[in-house]
Length: 296
Image 1 (cartoon, rainbow, N blue to C red):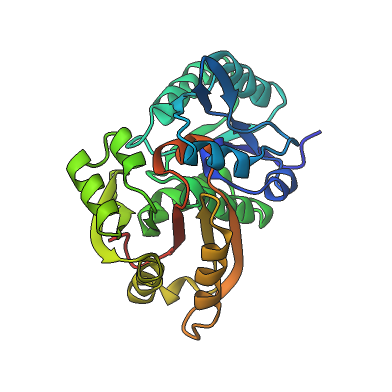
Image 2: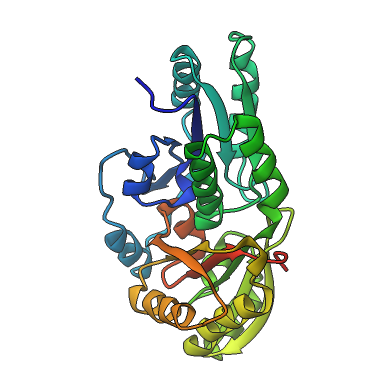
C-alpha cells in the first residue's frame, strides 16, 4: 500500500540517487540510449549502472544516441498509479531538450479521463539532471509536510525558473554532435583549452554564457555565478552537483561552496549524470544547481 495520498512521477533525467528514489517512493520513467544496434534503459529500479564504464566508452570514441521512454511502460505506470487510488503529480524533463515531457503529459491527460475521481497535474520543469531532481526533492519534502497536490504543483510552477543550472564541459565536440554548438566553435575551444560555461534559460535550452581558459577556472566560474545569484530568501536549501565521471572536480566545487559563509546548504545532492544526458554533454561535464534570484 502506498504511503502517500498522491504519487510523484518523474523520469530518469532527474539523476536522483537511488536512496532518494526509494525513500520517497518515486515512480521513474526511463529514457533510452543506443549504440551498435543495442538498446539500453537509463534507469532500472534497484540496479546500479556502471556509469564510469559508460563515460570511458565515450572517451574511447563510442557514440550513443538517445530516445524517449517506452510508451507502453509509461502508460502502464500511469494507469497503475490511478488504479492504486492515488492522485498523480508528474514532474518532467525540459521540453526544450526532449520530447519526453510532451509525450508523458499527453498520456497522463488521456488516461486520467478513465479515472474522473482522480487528480492529475503535470509540470514541465524546463530543467535537467539535478535541476529537475531538486524540484522533485522539494515536492517530496512538501508532500511529507502534508501539503496538498495543488499546493505542491503551484510551488513547482512558481519556482522552477529560480532553479539555476550552471555547467561546464570538458570537450565541446559532444555538444557539437548534438547540434548545440558549431564544429568551428568546438574545434577552436579544444585547441585553445577554452572551457565554456553554460546555463539553462527559462525555455529550457542550453545557452553558452562565457568562455574561460582552463578547467580550474571554469569550475571557479560556476562558484562565482552561484555567489552572484544565490537567493538567501529561500533559507537553507539543497545544492545539487552532477558530473560526467569527474568526481575530483565535483569534490573541489563542493568544498568551495561548503566554505562560503553566505550559503545555507541543507544538504548536497551529488550523483553521476545519466547516460541519456551524458551522451550529449560528454565525460567531464560538471553541473551545479541551486535556488537563485533567477536562472540568468
